[in-house]
Each structure stands twice: as C-alpha cells, then as structure tokens.
Length: 566
Image 1 (cartoon, one colour):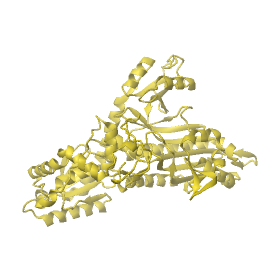
Image 2 (tube, rainbow, N blue to C red):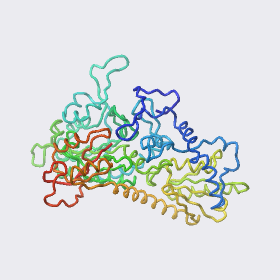
Image 3 (cartoon, one colour):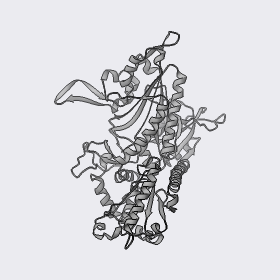
Image 4 (cartoon, rainbow, N blue to C red):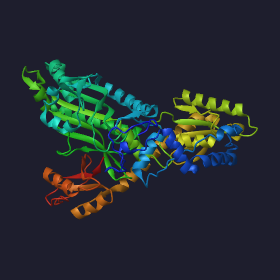
C-alpha cells in the first residue's frame, strides 16, 4: 500500500505471497509512496535514470547537436533521483505490474485494501473511451440516467439465481452513526435489481418500448481474495446499459451491436486484439438467457481476461419484476431485456499487454499526452530560441488536435525527462536542440520501439500524425502476433493438459455439456487455478464430421477457447 509513511494495512495481510493470477495481493505491495518507490528503484537501476541523464544527452550531442546538461544547472541535477523499475516484466510479472501502475502515475494505493485512487493519467484514458462509447450509444437512441447506490434486501434478493451469483461480494451498510439500522442496506454490485422495479412502473404499453437506458457509475464488489489494481478491485467505475424491448429479435440485435462497440474500444483504442464469442451456460451472467463477451489474453501470464460483456437477459427479470406491457393487439406480454457493461478493467489489460521494462506504453488514441516536447539546450546554445521553438511546436500540434505538451522544468536534465516520460508511456517524444533549431527540424523518438526520425518543422503536423497512426497500428499488430503465437489447437485431453502447462490459449472441440466443463475444472485445479471455458468464438473454424470432444470423447458440437483467466 502506498500513499504515505504512516499507511496501515486494514486486513493485516502482510506475509509475502503471490496470488493465483500471477499478481501480488494489493495488500502486499511495499508500504511506500510512489515517489519513494521511484527513489529506491533508481538506486538499483541507475542506467534507467542517473546514467541515462548522461547517455541521453551524449547521444543527442552526437546525433543532433543537443546536450544532456539541462543548461548546466549542476546543483539541481544532483538532486535528480533515478527512474526505473526494479522488476522485469518477463521475470516477475506481478511485481512489475504493481510497480508500473504506481510509477507510471496511474494509481495510488489507498488505506482500504482493494481500493485504489485513480490518478489523472488514468482518468484521462477512461474519459477518452467514455466519450467514444457515450457518443455511439446516443446514436442508438440510448439515454443516460442515474440510479441510487443503495439497494434494499427485499429487492436485491428477488431474483434468486442472480443474487446467488453476487451474494459473496455484496457489501452491506448496517449502522448509521452509533445506531444499528433496522434493515441493512446493500451497496449495488450491479443494478438490475435497482432499476427494474421502475421499469415495471414506466412500461405500460408497446409505445413505451423500447426503453434503453445507460448509467456511468461506480459499483462495489467486496472481493476478499487477491485484489489487483484495475483487474480485481472492491470498487470500480463502469457503464451499465439496461434495455427493454417488445421482441427477442430486437434484443438479440442490440446485444451484438453493443459487443461490436466493445471490440472497437479494445482493438481501435487500446490496440488489444480480442475474440468475440458466447459464454457457456456455466459462465453466463447469473439469471440471464445468454452472455456474449470480448475476450483478451495476456501472453506473459497465459491468462484470459473477460474484457466486456453484453447479455441477453431474456424474460426472467421481466417475470420477477412484472415488467409487462400491452402489445399492439391489446394482449398482455412480457418485455425482453438486455444488460451490458465495460469497466476500468480495460485499462489494466492495456497496461499488461503493452507495458515493458521501461514502464507504460500507451496507444496514442487514449494517451492523455500524445507528444511530449523536450528542449535540449547545452553550453552556449540559444536556449531561448530552443524554448520558443518548443512552444511553437506544441501550439502547432495542439491546433491540429494533437495532445502535446512541453517539459520546461529546469531542475531536471533532458535524460531524466526522457526516462520520466517513457515511464508514463507517452507515445512520441520530440527533442529540439541547437542543431535541430539550425536545421529547422525536430527529432521524434517513438516510445514503442525507440526508433528516431527527424521531421522538418514545415512538415511537423503531417509527420507527427503519420507517426502516431503508425504507432497505434504497430502496437495492435505486435499484440496480435504475441496473442496468436499463444493459441494452441488441441484435440485430446493429453494435448490439453500439456498446452495448459505451457500457459496457452487453448482452442478445442467440445461437446457443450455442463458436466464435462465442471469435470475439466475439477481435474485442472491447482496452485495456478482451474481451467475453464473463455468463450465459443462467433467465427468458428470448420468442425469436420466425426470430430470428438477433447474431454469427453463424445461428438463435438463447437470449437471453444479454454484456459485460465483473471
């Protein structure tokens, strides 16, 4: 836990441990603030910061006439702390992840286990995705609303299967001041039971349909095991859509429309490849008719991630909450309902997939700062001229709709600044030194592959836009190559066990029987967690006649992705 020297662990969980999901328990992260962690990290990895101050400037001197001296302010340069991560992604993924989300200024640990402060660097990413998704659902005539955080026990427990799915995670308010509440009040884990009593009130006839609402809010799920920033937390931000239709075909159509928006968030914005598919009966939303999802995969841990879900609830909730209407024939009928959601988990998946040993790697489309401009003056250089060129560069990029800033801090050297912005994952760095000024150019350095390119100032906007587009596509392509290399097709139980041990994303023929899925879970339980179905992809490979289920030996009905997951 971070956030101050006096921070306490509220659960008393301070034994060294690594969780099943290859991530350390949030409670177990060392109790130092992000700044202190940077200092200790810098002592162990001077090359990342201290030495980089020298090498960064020297390289610039050789290549473009810049210097790493920060204007010769030696006294202040001595105060610089080294930047760097003390763990490597391939060697200790859990510790690396915990370190990078703090040092990259994404989150700060809070004094209540499983809760995290989302810093501006994170909120900017969330707001960019929110703006896209909110705009798209408004085109679909879906309206925003807000329902209360609290739920009465009577309402929460009305749908038996639904509440059984969430019961272990429900947090309850039991006191007001020093007085016990006569009836405890639940804090929403999701909002079906909060909203649907009012759908019953608002829907009377076919002209009231469809009713399509969405809310941006927080929910609480009191996870007791292995809280992890973004991936598994006790409180998180999300959007949840709840819609009602007169017919099932209308509901089915919306399920897929929303799922496609979720695919676009992952692939077009976060540059993460996903598989669209349908969940098994065991893995579907509690109380729903069927669940579709986009599934991501983290190659470093060999684990799938349920990226977002779009559920058709059928008429089950309509029956429980008496959401009836009079159809065009004057007959009484029940509505068909959907619910769908994505959360701040998306951001954690992005960090896991793209981050490296230098820190975050942000796709340009979601980066709060797409371009950081760093002045590189030295010796008798025209410092003011360089600063003016940096300001003009930022202004030109901003006017073109590119999110750019300049780092004019005079108490840090250019080399230190390079490491700082690399840690924060800014997609593109622009350096301007004396030779750049003389040649009317800027030097661009990519975060994803460290390649350098000089762009004439006259062609600045076009050149930077092209680079950012290329970075976005390159991140997706690289992630897809890594993901695809982890996919293994198996046809027998022996092949399945071998692939699971190698942390593969397994595609196997399956008989689609719940008992067989349960049996696979039972047989694969262990320290790493049990394997389960992730989804049956909509794009099904050919299933030759006579193909047998890998687990039961019965005739296979479909191809399904299996693996361990977060």
